[in-house]
Image 1: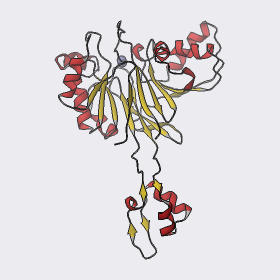
Image 2 (image 1 turned 180 degrees about the vertical axis):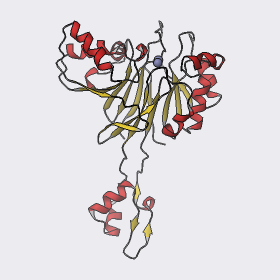
Image 3 (image 1 turned 45 degrees about the horizontal axis):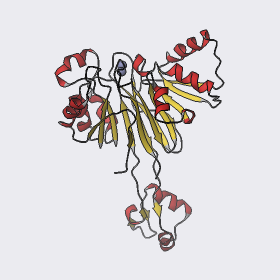
Image 4 (image 1 turned 120 degrees about the vertical axis):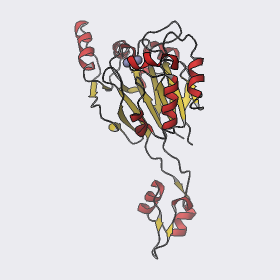
Length: 307
Ligand SMILES: [Zn+2]
Ligand SMILES: [Zn+2]
C-alpha cells in the first residue's frame, strides 16, 4: 500500500516557545513530499527528524502571517547551498514572490534551481496540483488576511481482479480497466453484475484537509466532508472564545464541532497559543465534542489508514 503520512514540524501559533515551533508539516503521499507552511525552524526540524530536504518539490503556504512562512527564505537558501538544481513549486499568496525575491536580491544570491510560483486564486475546491497519484485543492479560510487551506487527496486506487473472473466473463482490456475503476458489468442479455462481485482490494482514496488559520466557519464543512484526517487549528480554549473571534482564530471546542459536522474520521488540533504550556486541556475540550481527536505533536508521524 502506498504511504500517506503526516509529520508535524511545528504546532505553535504566533510565537515560538522553548518547546514548540510555529506551523509546518510534511505530508508524504506515495513518496511525494509536500511541505505545508514553513514557520521559523522548519529546516532545523527537518534535520532533527532526519527528513530529506531535497525530496520536497512542492511547498504550500496558507497565508502571510509570519508564523506560517518566516522559515521559507532560510529553507530555500539551504536547498541552494546543498546543491539543488531541481525545480521547486510554491503554492502561495501572490505577494510572497516579491518578499522572497527582495531578500535574495539584496544578498546577491542567485539560486541554482528554479522557483515556480502558483499564486492562490482564493476559490473553494479549486484544483491547484495533480499528478497520477494525488490531487490538491484549495479551500478559502476565514482569517484576518487572505488565507487558504488545502485538501490533499489520493487519486482513485484501482481495485484488483482475479484471472478466473476475467476468463469466466471473457473480459476485454477496456472492460477490465472500467471494472477496476468501479464500473458494473452489463452482460449481452442485459444482466447487471455489481462491481463488488467482480473485484477485490477495493480501496477508498484517502484524504487530508489542512485548516489553519481560521475562525469558526461552518461554510468549510461541505468542502471537508468525510475526509480521513482533518487538521484544524485550536488556538484557544472555549473560555477565550471572544479573543478567538477578534483574532480570527478558533477554539478547541469549535474545532471539534467542525469535525463533527463534517463527519471526518479523525481530527488533529494544533496552532496552540503560547499561553498553554501543556495542550492537554485543548485536547479534552475538543474530545468533548469529537472523540477521535489527537494533538499535533512535533516529530510525531500520523499514518492515514484506509477505512
Ligand atoms: Zn498562525
Ligand atoms: Zn494567521
